[in-house]
Amino acid sequence: MAIDLQFDRQHIWHPYTSLKNPLPVYPVTHASGVTLYLEDGRSLIDGTSSWWSAVHGYNHPQLNAAVTEQLSKMSHVMFGGITHQPAVDLAKTLLSLVPASLTKVFFADSGSIAVEVALKMALQFWLAQGNPHKTKILSLAKAYHGDTFAAMAVCDPDDGMHSLFRSQLTPQLFAPAPQSRFDGLWRPEDETSLRWLFTQHHQEIAAMIVEPILQGAGGMRMYHPRYLQLCRELCNEFNVLLICDEIATGFGRTGRLFASEHAAIAPDIMCVGKALSGGYITLAATLCSDQVANGIGGTLMHGPTYMANPLACSVANASLQIIASGQWQTQVSAIEQQLKTELIAAKNLPQVADVRVLGAVAVLEMMDTVDVALCQRLFVDLGVWIRPFGRLLYLMPPFIISPQELRQLTGALLQVAQQPIFTSQPPLPGA
Ligand SMILES: *Cc1c(COP(=O)(O)O)cnc(C)c1O
Image (cartoon, rainbow, N blue to C red):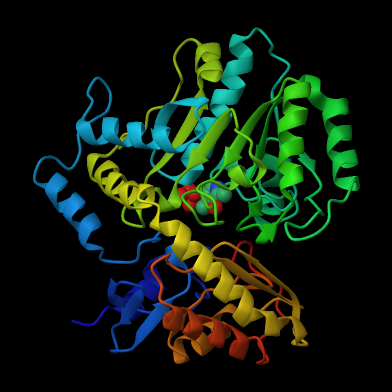
């Protein structure tokens, strides 16, 4: 039976869309490797890894085996008062991959919740230290940390979510987005503005939260490693905890296992998600140091129903085993080289404002906001799955993509970037 698109259109919300005037959705029946199969028989090369997550591709034999094996033992048991092998194994593997100063793991059920838990840890830490004045979080303009309320409050202060919910969001502090590019020279004004904020406000700042090196859904901006080092130095100098949100960047995406390695720093608290479970089932985690955990002392006030779900932990274990084998390094550096070579031509296109590549991420920043529905149709007609937002056309393919398949993605990107794709409508928040 065909997927009921009319029912979908009338009754189901998709991410960041309106039910009154929904964007079209494409019915997918199955997926394998880097290919999504549409109901009408067409197939699409995936340029998104289903939002950073499916790094090993779809329908992966090892990941499938991990889920099915666990399924026959138990799908879920509560984590309150119970533990199990998949959770213990996953925590061990995670701790073996992250900086040695991170020693404790909290399993969360999505990235946004991992951010909530990180913020809670930081606030609770200072309360337990007898310092009730450190209640603010310092974040960056153009940041994205999730869709729940505390996470929204540390997202870019001018974007749609913020303006819509302004009166409901805890006011936080924001530094300007870093101006020093990853591939450019260090600009001292970045230090001036950040240091000023620390100097003025450190007594009220509990933690600084950053997406290391790559600001993702808030604008796909890649900034200078010196900036991240500076965050670490200022946090040390002014007694502020540093939270690295590696939910998008973790597990090899930027060419390092974690993006904070570009700056050779370790955070006090770290969030991981997205690729953690290889694109199979929602799972995230918040890690922290002994110092933070001991400082909190008492009970950490959080405990989701599906905490450390065994199916999710098992598939995450299988996914991290593939990551730990290290083959992502060759894959990501080959992808980076090819993206640079094939997309450099886009710099000269009149509609393109900027081209950025880091690891297995490529961004064409266009001169104006693009029409998402139109772009998607053009991409689907070219046999690729690429979902633009705002002024950005971007790629973050599964690491297993072949050079031929990647060439199809870059070719489609270059072709669509030359079409009349700009919309006169104001962009939907987050669309
Ligand atoms: C996607 C994302 C989140 C939120 O994760 P969800 O699983 O969608 O809740 C938080 N931070 C960053 C950097 C992300 O990219």
